[in-house]
Image (cartoon, rainbow, N blue to C red; front, top):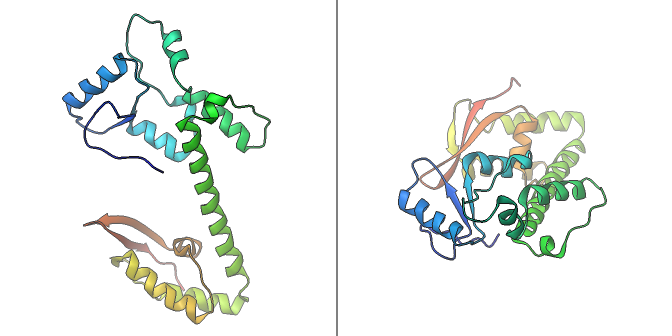
Length: 212
């Protein structure tokens, strides 16, 4: 999305993601940016969870320094008011008539919300297409396809995601199917699995396979 990820805090920093036991010097530098009036935000784990989950944006908070300015003045000085912008954007997505200010439309917050919404639409469309294509198989063929997919794995098996998808792709090819959202097929067929990364490689651990 165009973000430039850094490990240190500088005058070019816009957001500070704060995990467990953050470095005090980084926090102090960031607080100095806030005190200087720079439009920056601290984001804690709970904030990130809400943002990625796409809900309860009203609980998203911005750290505001205690200065000679009133809270109302500080709030007014911000480029956008995140909770209000998210609320308006949600109404817009749900089809309500909403008017955004020029400042909101030009803000980085609006751009990120738009990107997130487009990505969610893309995921939903891909999943729907997969399920529609799958339903085009006749019942007997779908049953054989399901058995072939489940036969690709053993319960408790731990393998790389690439290898798992290679096995599944052979079945797709055999049935003349070309699905992108393979994880969606596993979920649809009742396979319980966990995705995780080890040594920078994505893995799938098969937790449960339904009875054939």
